[in-house]
Length: 212
Image 1 (cartoon, one colour):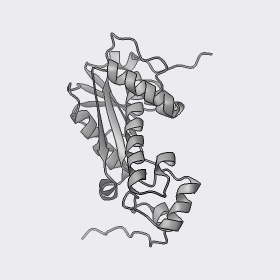
Image 2 (cartoon, rainbow, N blue to C red):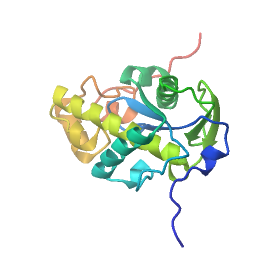
Image 3 (cartoon, rainbow, N blue to C red):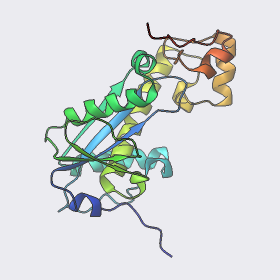
């Protein structure tokens, strides 16, 4: 049985213009969370090999990023910082990055297809799609742009904060990353609001503030 690839069936079923929205970087111990919004042209062929970014390697994502940007009606990327992650929590920070991406589109969408099952507040109608990056071409495209944009940020942070290996593991919880944290302690790019970071660095756990 053939494995289904992302297509434009969901986009054609919604009022146009439709953007796909996805995030990258909810899991890492360091760096911002990113999100992308992409409006594809239903009249143009999809980039060859378009798929969920997690199923692609670095070279494939970079090649597809170029193709997506060349063929898209509009695209944009938004970020939420480490400080905003600490203030809002990672879920709502991801939503903020999504809102910034959709708001930055040069064409205002009527509808947004968002990967997952959480209905974020965006400046248009929202439809959540579980496993959307493997079903919707627009969401798959957004997953690639969000990932490649965040990867470049982590490469820049690697030059700014050497020794942690951000350019290779992109801030995820790799063994080498934990080893560097034990040796060097945290840097400003680390998510100090995260228990795993605080534990490996010997910092006390954060106590939630009680309402007055």
